[in-house]
Length: 196
Image 1: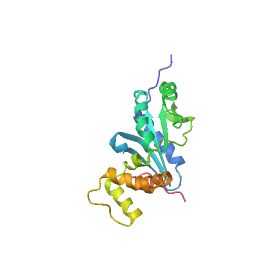
Image 2: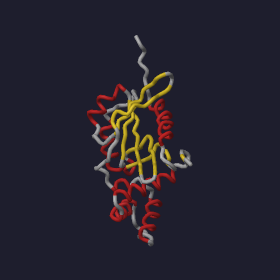
Image 3: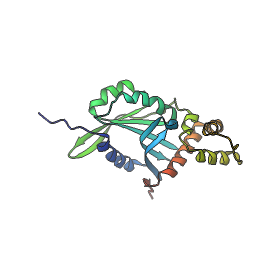
């Protein structure tokens, strides 16, 4: 009888980052453990490209796949593209509980390496909320964005939520995602892909 190999988050993650770095667009970056939705969730891995943000949530064999249902409610509001990376153990349940715009990627182990099989490609997330997404940014980053858009400083008592609300009213969805990608990119200098 073949011994069942358990794949944990820590096993999958480095191979996922390697895989994403190979498909990373020019000047794209990869970030880990990014707080989103005003601290309600922490994204495992984010691929940031010019005008794009794609979140990858990992669920290994020892993780509770049911958690993704609640987490997805937060992610749906603040990320334009989303994918779950999981194992064969959780695949059936993931297909049942995740919204259709979520991509699903299967992690498989072979010859001491982990490979990825795309079960379902991610598509446009229509639940995305500009204001909620902007709450990913720090107050200093929101202030800078406000100044760039208005050519004036915000009121001294303006909160992060107030700034995010005002900026969301000035930007389209595309503009919001561009601001997010540019700002998050500045936070992640260690995973840069500068293709020539």
